[in-house]
Length: 187
Image (cartoon, rainbow, N blue to C red; front, side, top):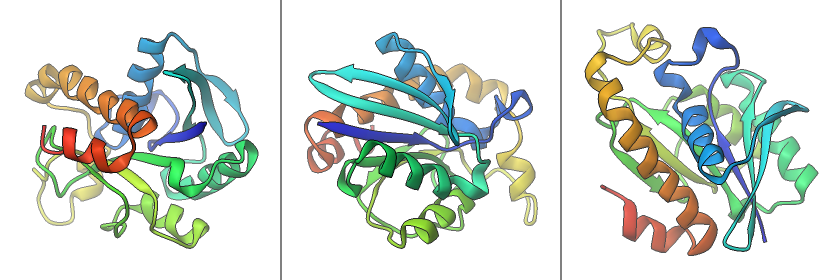
């Protein structure tokens, strides 16, 4: 069985340590743990992993956040992966820092990456792992906040929260979304 796991972010060193790039960070940690490198391919950096008999295609779009749907759609078609085996890892300002929540569907919540994916796929029925980045910004400063780097306190806790996020990927690809949500949501 094949699974597509897409981490949202923006390409380039300028964005590497920003809150908006947590999707990339989670996929980097998972690929490192499995021992598979990323290669630049069409619309994305891609790593192909095997985990417990499952083939997992990790995709970090190079299309920039606002055009993430192009990469998701391309890789779904390229690898012939149905929507129920697609998972998107994204930042979420509606959740406190480090809070992790998986859902099987939902609104874009104002997130431009999710908004584009929904527009391109014409559905919101795909799994998403929302990684809380908090909302410590003044009105109108949301963009600067998500494109800003982690605070010292956040950086100290980030590795442990990313490790937990990789457990969501493992669960989604082995025991399915319902059991993964039961076992990991809120942890």
